[in-house]
Amino acid sequence: LSDKLSAAFKRLKSKGKLTEDDVKAAMREVRLALLEADVNYKVAKEFTKKVSERAIGSEVMESLTPGQMVVKIVDEELTNLMGGGEARLNIPSSGPCVMLLCGLQGAGKTTHAAKLGRLLKKKGHRPLLVACDVYRPAAIKQLQIVGQQAGVPVFEEGQGDPIRISKDAVRRAKDYGNDFVLIDTAGRLQIDDKLMDELKNIKEAVHPNEILLVVDSMTGQEAVNVAKSFDEKLDITGVILTKLDGDTRGGAALSVKAVTGKPIKFAGVGEKLDDIEVFHPDRMASRILGMGDVLTLIEDAQTKLDEKQAEKAAKRMLQNKLDFNDLLAQFDQIKKMGPIRGVLEKIGMDTRKLSDSQLDDRIVDREKAIILSMTPQEREKPSLINPSHKRRIAAGSGTRVEDVNKLLRSMEQMQKLMKRVKGKKGRRRFMPPMN
Ligand code: GDP
Ligand code: MG
Image (cartoon, rainbow, N blue to C red; front, side, top):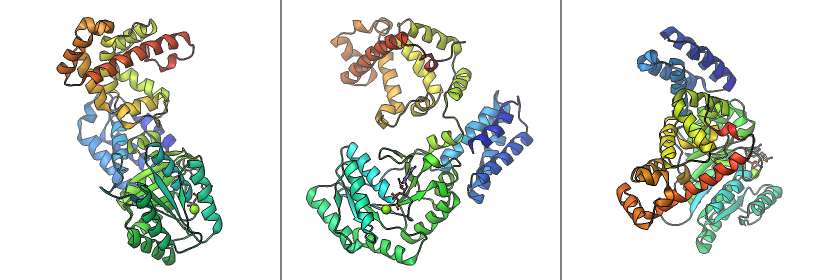
């Protein structure tokens, strides 16, 4: 899908000024590319209609880089198509959060029960896995193995009654203070009434806060059909889209939300237990557009950054003279390039280990406020800042002294890092362009 879309956009980008016909022609190509990627027909049609309307009706046609503007609209609309922002979990105000994982055989339920357990454990929770796929002894064993690898306890009662087991498990979780209960269930090759009835009964017995349907993204449109059926029968709360690492088309990711109205909450991106991500529509959109590479970042940077300023900052960085004045200038530039997570990802950084608060764009605003409350001398020479200055800066910027300290420390770290980067070769590609 990426390749097809890039080709369509390349043609647009090379044009100086767009006509309505240019946009329409490009949208025809986009629609074909979407259909080829196994995106639902209606979804593809509505999508291109929306993009065309925005592109033709707005300031795009007069803008200096209309091609880029259209790409931006496509990016935004792809993001909206997948739900806009990151979907939250329904956490109850008291008692454990019960999550029912359901789906067809081989979709990745058992694996993702363990992956989710591990993810939650890493965030300080106390999850409990529950073996409700009772029809094959091997299924219970599999959950025990991955549970052990994930360091998460597994509740099982052998090949008993799944409804009973799930009830017992929730009771046990309450007794032992497990705050998440992840129920692994049986799958079938196809949807059948027996499976659905069993899931409905478990649902009635334990009232899950989340009913997460696990679907294999590589099955494309079929995954969307499965999601639709499960949702009609069980009223799911979200989807875990697995095997995205093998999905080169993105059709399921793009259609699930539009067809079912239910968001994708997590994505499986590999066989290992750490290969799970909270699903971010904007990142998926960028990935689909093939923007996740350094080259695009540099392209973006070249058009968006004030090149002179970037050059100055880069030179100073290389000379190891980074100070708060540079940082202030950088913040404004960074903001122009969009959300921080996207920027870091484009330069190839793995942001999975960074918490959302570390990536919160508001932090940039807060840090900017702090720097603005420093005197120019303090910005240039942070070592001048003593405790009473810190109190003044905190008061002036509406922050706390801790925040000021944190920023000062990160400046020190950055300066140290600069020293190291300077000593290493081949790292320059992470610098802003300097031509
Ligand atoms: P279940 O029948 O729904 O419980 O599916 P399993 O959890 O047993 O997974 C079926 C197969 O898919 C296993 O071999 C998993 O290792 C594999 N698998 C699951 N999720 C992913 C994923 O996100 N990426 C890749 N590459 N393989 C996966
Ligand atoms: Mg299983």
